Length: 376
Image (tube, rainbow, N blue to C red; front, side):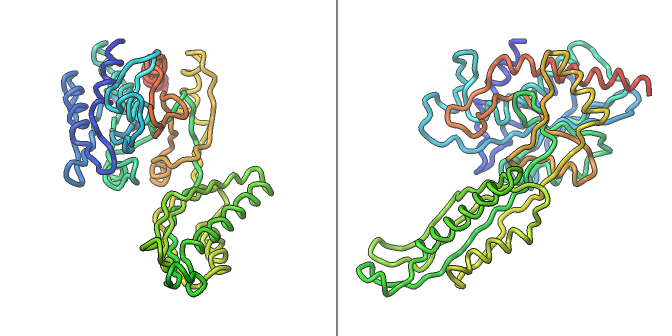
């Protein structure tokens, strides 16, 4: 089992930050690893250096097909790390590095399980496995999961290996990313009253929207909107009144909220302050909800109980690729073995016990499914 530690370390040491997006090296590593165990993986690219890895494992009868899908890319490491982000250092029963929890630990578990199945000469009778490690998950999946999904054969269930602490993520909030461009009026910085400061207008608009979100959450505890201002830029010089400013906002929202309703809220709020603006939708994903009670989920729950893990269902506040899967009409959940609150963090790590337990859970889940299908 020490191989899972070495494998996780090797994956972390490969820089696959997105942006800029450079998944080819890590995809090749996974390709070589699987080929060494007798698999026939393929590398798929939709742009130079943006590699995805696909490996199909056929059973004797092919009664059902499950998709296992971690991702290859990570967010940028950034600065101020106490432990170098690509060192994969082991300390206090943890492996540190960018992507350790999101999502190279999960990727390593998937690879390790496939390796063990070959070593044990275990031939599945009924369950086909499609292992898909994707590029571009951190930036919308347009070069990875989205274009590949529709080319895959029949899928009966998807296990998106991008979760933490063995939680079953069956739903996720909606996502709305907006860019608001505000126009003001230039003037000399010594005479601000002669102009209209677009930066101040932007602050006022943001404050109004933020307060509205707080009121909505207070009125309805189930609403739980979240709002983040991720980027703001405006002005030319310190001694000039800024005539332009833009800000990019990230709104997460629950079911029963339409895109049109939310955009109207933003427009009405902005127009309390100015008519000189433009509003652009940068990204939108509707809220989604998968089944919590079906053959696959029940098998997963039984497998977890076998490891003394109480099944825990959760709604994700962040975006995943679950919505793309459900849009195709394939049931699935997000599930994984990472350490909570570590995704995108400085000094990111994964707890080593999670890796060992993750291998047991995933392998036993697949074996359980294959055995149960004997009776169908």
